[in-house]
Length: 275
Image (cartoon, rainbow, N blue to C red):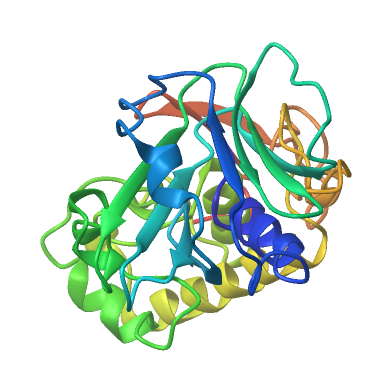
């Protein structure tokens, strides 16, 4: 599933082209993805100007004159979604569900597994949408710090790794980035969240920021379907220290990387280095 770095890379790839452009048409080919696509969405979008493209967690937020008569187009890539810029007359393929059409280009949403989301929110504050209002802190914002994370986990006795993936606490830290951040900070994914010291949480927060920044710089991770808006692929997965390296030698100690299951997800770690 595209996580925070992949969504941020998608946003950055669109910024040179779409803000300031006016929508001349929209095409909804699939009425239901993860949620029903709002009725009349194409008519609402037509004629509006895209003023900005923001990100909240794993959601892309297109500001379509929200301070005036417009609102926000809210898009989630789901498990297999991607956005591509192309000529407006490019024929759609099987899994192309939505086009946002401008004078000289079109933004096309492709989602083979149909777990993506396409919604509309009226008004100036997209954060009031029910799907966004329940989200936790942004890991790249100043409010996310070691002291904050320490205080937030005092009553959390479960393992720390699934906790990092809880979007009600902190958003966008997916499976790859949780495993890699814990390895960088030498914390075992099995350790109870309330049994980690303040100092170690400070190290973990630094590791999370470094890991996410490194992935954004590498164009994200293209493990399955994810591609950039120009069709290119991310390469962060090629530099992972533990993720998907079961049985291979740890880069620090040379002992084998283990894989376990936590909350239904694969967790990769080095039992020798991570305590």
